[in-house]
Amino acid sequence: MSEGFFMNIEYSSRAGRIPPYLFAELERLTAEKKKQGVDIISLGIGDPDIPTPKFVIEVLQEEVEKPGNHQYPSSQGERFYREAVAKWYFIRFGVELDPDKEVCNVMGSKEGIANIARAFVNPGDSVLVPDPAYPVYYNGATILCDGKPVVMPLLEENGFLPQYDAIPQSELKKSKMVYVNYPNNPIGAVASNEFLKETIQFALENNLILCYDNAYSEFTFDDYVAPSIFEFEGAKECAVEFHSCSKTFCMTGHRVGWAVGNEKATAGLKKIKSNIDSGCPMYIQKAGAAALASYTSRKRPEVVEKIMKEYEYRRNVLADGLNGIGVKCSKPKATFYVWARVPFGDSLSFVKKVLEQGVVITAGTGFGKYGEGYVRFALTQNEDKIKEAVERISGSL
Ligand SMILES: *Cc1c(COP(=O)(O)O)cnc(C)c1O
Image (cartoon, rainbow, N blue to C red):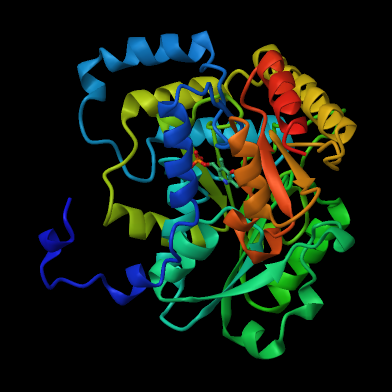
């Protein structure tokens, strides 16, 4: 499309404030490689390569046929769905939720993470966001509400946790919300219970809505079990937790998730959503509810366990392989990412060097400026491809 198509229409100032897409050039280089016939191995995007479990697909197929599921759903989620979410929280975390007041369906957690800000952030308000981080906190939530992102660096020397006492008081006074995400994308770091308790205290003391992104609570390895924020005292008074079927059940394409917790925060999100979307298709909600119902105890069901064992195995193959060729990384206890230090140069130049060998990875700077010096590998290829990727990367060192 030519520039002229837009004539004299300008982007809104908030759309103009979304930072330029860093990877346009990389995507062009990748497309060029493909055209040259190079068989690219992509460890770039965090999207499960394993298909959605069969029992979920069967529910989906059955439900899509029913005319009763062809009409407008409720944007907060049907009651059966909200009950399924509440039940899962009780079975998995021992947390009680009121399906009417404390649960809202979202069409993937990304949507909820962005939309909740519309209910609470006024132009000029500050929002505390980690860096490096999932870019939605900064852009989709804060910038698109004309808010001011205040960055909390996640540094290796602090265990990749934000330092709340380093945030200037002047910013804290203007802050409405804080986004926190553990197990963490892109780093793979996990948080201790002490840190989560500290986070709740910090939110309560500073009158902040704590937006806890728990997308990877089930995506854990080596006997590590991730908690819900609501396992800790005081969380219901300040927090809303975002989660979805996307990663746990390999359902990124189905767009089904939930926001749960603080009644006022949940109500705010429902109010916004009822004015923007008309809800997640009912057959998708049925599939989501069926996926959650596979949990019959705190332990992951066999079907999820199998998926996680596969990613755990790939993590070992990749991390051992990378360390073996001098690309330093630790084995994450959770998520399907390996966060590695670049052996030389900066993040972007290393990514380009690796791309020369036909392997796509993500520069740490794609997640914020504190990602400089790192790259992210997604474990979304099978063992053989991962081994070959390591082999190829060793050729670029
Ligand atoms: C994948 C991911 C999500 C989930 O996104 P959906 O919209 O639910 O598919 C949320 N937060 C983080 C940090 C993620 O990596």
